[in-house]
Length: 146
Image (cartoon, rainbow, N blue to C red; front, top):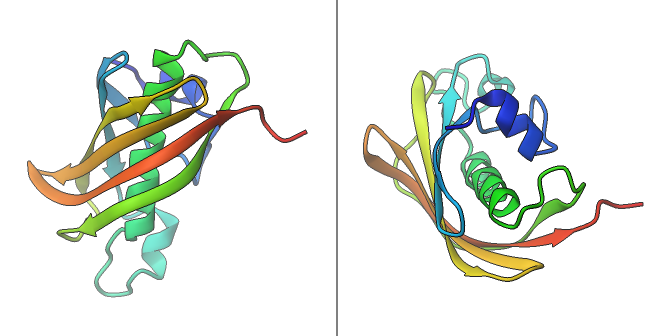
């Protein structure tokens, strides 16, 4: 388990772009289960869509990528190193159901391939046990820009 303080120690993201609230399970070198509490107070709901608020698909994928970033940082022993996890590619993204305010979005990610500087992941986002979105993605571990 990792609370918001642990999440913020692992990721450089901050409000409004921090999209992981806690980690429920982390098996180094294998997988992670994280949670995003989706609330009506999220800024994007004001315009997406008025009268029928749903979380944008790109932000669901970003939440999955952040969960995978925590998995990479913890598995590769990068906590406190200053290294960043950069998105490189998204493949096969599919959106199965809308994500609305008031739900807990369960983010499940697993390593598909792990190297020192490039990792591939498979991710699924679920609401109440039902698949909302899925994607495969690649990330690069690198130093922050100078």
